View 1 (cartoon, helix red, strand yellow):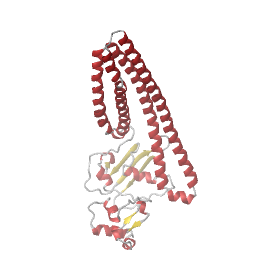
View 2 (view 1 turned 90 degrees about the horizontal axis):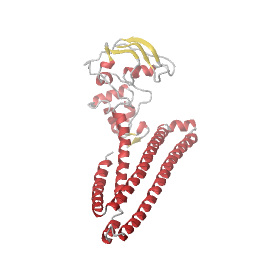
View 3 (view 1 turned 135 degrees about the vertical axis):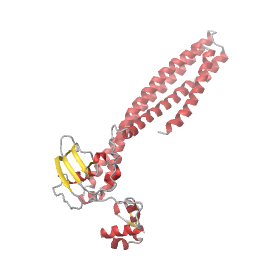
View 4 (view 1 turned 180 degrees about the horizontal axis):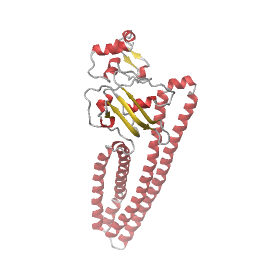
Length: 348
């Protein structure tokens, strides 16, 4: 998006200079000036059509490119499962299809762009030839001096220059609009919904949770929770048992406000979670998933992501409770050992 500012500065300077030359041609001969202006408008409409088509094709290409990038990311993250399922070939074929589809879209864009460039350049050659005949006529009919005609002929390339600068500017503006629309679709909450929290803070959460007739669905037509009600008091242990997909994880995701429920009420210590701020909710509730993500940094740094002011004693006590302390002490650099992404390797 930042490229647009340099492009505007560079091309506006050229356009202003070329406009000055057109003014001089107007002073020399009005007929030649009108001819150039007429050709300029035709050239502009051809170029504008080319840029508009290119922009529309670019939208398609960006979506397909993101799809390929996302698919590659999924392949990398799930490579172990793919190997265990012996599914490398099928996923490789799927990737080939996605890449071929992307390249076809790029080829289509290039093909259309070349068609309009051919039309544009052919028109330029035609207009240059027409200007030569016009100048010969004006000079032969004594409506234009030979020296003035040579001056106009010498600068007729400015027709190409001014439109080229303008089309480049137009193309960059279109790119800017496309990029800006994608950025603002995230920022203005129109396409991608943002998380929202209240402003009420509970200084010390006791741990009383209650669901009152809570209904939630990931898709409108299929309810995961339907008027679910229960209450859990602090200092007690409660287990949710059920088959896969029954809604166990959903309960915790709603409690941590990872999703907003459709109907009902969820409270923490009697306060609606929609009124509570982010720190009150997520600073007091921790979910340990079945597959916790480990970042490519030291064990110490991974733990500091959760608690930046963690002391050495707190770190070791947490690892002791998790039964990890003995294993960590066998590593080359103990708590400063670099673990690979997902904890797949260790570096000295």
